[in-house]
Image 1 (cartoon, helix red, strand yellow):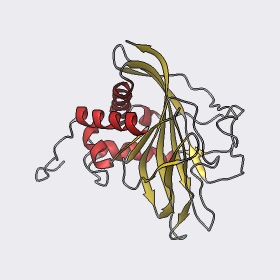
Image 2 (spheres, one colour; image 1 turned 45 degrees about the vertical axis):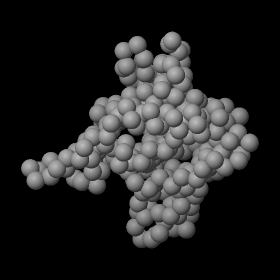
Image 3 (spheres, rainbow, N blue to C red; image 1 turned 90 degrees about the vertical axis):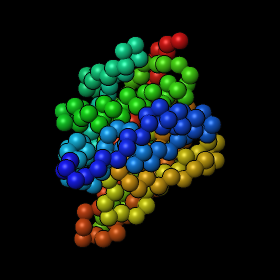
Image 4 (cartoon, rainbow, N blue to C red; image 1 turned 60 degrees about the horizontal axis):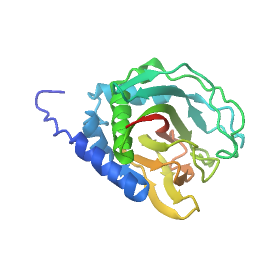
Length: 260
C-alpha cells in the first residue's frame, strides 16, 4: 500500500458474526456484502493490483480444470475440490487427504451416485491467508447460530462457469437442490461479461425465501442446508467476443461431533 493511501477501518468481526448468525437463526440464510466480509478478512480493495493476497487467491480460478462428469454433457464448468477439518478445541484447520467427491442421487439427480475425481486444490489456494481467515470466520458464525461449537468437515468447491457463443452456463445444472451437508455458502470471486446468475433460496417445500444476486467480489450468501434448498439461474455472455464467466467459491460445512 502506497504512503498516500488510507486503509479503511476494519469491520468488527464480532458484530458481523452475530448479525450473520442472527439471520441464520431467524430466516435460515444470511447475506454478507463483499465490502463487509472483505473488511473482516483484511481485504480492502479486490480491484487493486496492490492487494497482493487477493490477486494471488483470485488467480487460482484461472487454473481450474474442466469438469468432465457433467450428466448434461456440458463443457461450461471448471473446478477443483478439496477438504479441510476444523477442530473447535484449538480453532485450527487441517487439510485432509485428497479423495473423489460423491453425492447421493437423492441430492444430485444429475451427477450423483458415483465417484467424481476432480483435480486437487492448488497449494497457492490452500495456503492463502484469505482462505484461512474466511473458514475460521465461518466456523464462528455457525457456532454462534448453533449455540455451541462443533468440529467440521469443510468441502471446498472453486467453480468457474462460462457462458459464450449463445450457449448458457449453468451454475446449478441439477436445478433446485440441497447439498446434503449442514451449512452451504457461496462467495463471489469475479463476474466477467455476463448476465444472469441469480441465487434463489427456498424452503424445503420450494417456497421462495429470497433471490440474491452476488455481484461484487466477496459477496457471500450462507444458508442452512438442512432447512433450505437453492439454485442459480443460467448465465449468458453480454459480448461473445470477450471472455465471460462467473467465478465462485462454494463452501460446505458438515458437522462432526459437537462440544458443550
